Amino acid sequence: MDFFTNILNAIGSGATAYILANRLRDPQTRPNTLAGFQLAESGAVPFLSNLAARASTEGDTWLAEKLTIHAADEKRHGQIFAHGLKQLGKQVMTFEERKQQSKKTEKPSPFFGKYYRDYDPASLKADKIDWQVFMASTYILELDASKDFARMARALPEHEPKSRNLQQSILSVAEDETRHAAYLYEAMQRRLSNTQVDALVAEWRKRKIDAMFAMVGNMFTAGDNSRSLVKDDAPTEIEQPAAASISIPLTSNN
Image 1 (cartoon, one colour):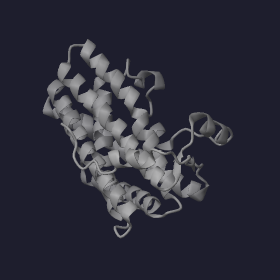
Image 2 (cartoon, rainbow, N blue to C red):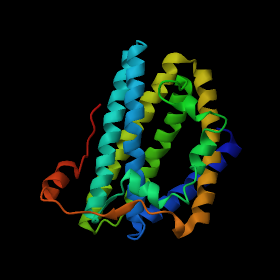
Image 3 (cartoon, rainbow, N blue to C red):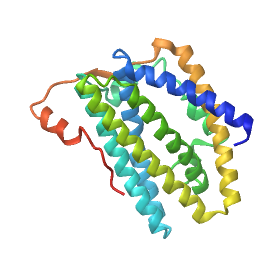
Image 4 (cartoon, rainbow, N blue to C red):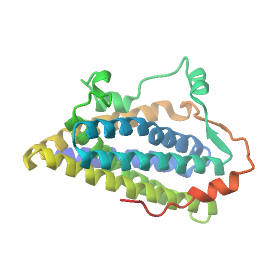
């Protein structure tokens, strides 16, 4: 990155990290924050699975394997955030419940609208997306997410057992995101020259900076008026065993 881009990236990343860390640390906003992460991580699973199938069909078995692992990781991440919500006595609303609640207030994501500007939504589906667009855009997102999750995890109060357990789980998510960024960078290197990779990464870095400022501006505007994504959880008899099975995933499979 050039000096000016580097400064903008530092400012945008710092503001985003500050806001998200505060929202995760605050008991009032923590449930909605965890729910947002659960939906984002779980929602990526079908897309990645379809991409893995496409890569396999096209004969790229290396990429297909990496994407399959990526999809499995995202599924586990969704379970981690779901468990964090369960410990707070909450769960994510169903799609229909969220649809009913947001019928009059739903707006497109300012972040992704800016990040993928000039791209038709249909061209970003798994069966059509250009591999270079997927690899570079997702590389930037995964690389930054690894840092954001680490910062947010450390913002949680360590003296609370539930928060400490959630902290360790989120740190494991950060480790996975670092690994995802690494394979995506390697995937670009397999198809492009180093100069082309640098140019592609620089393009999506600038897009990410624009998207961050759009998101931060929206966060300050929305304030506490952002719609709720959670509802009270219904206790079940298998709650304790289920929690124990995913509470501290400290390591990840390669």
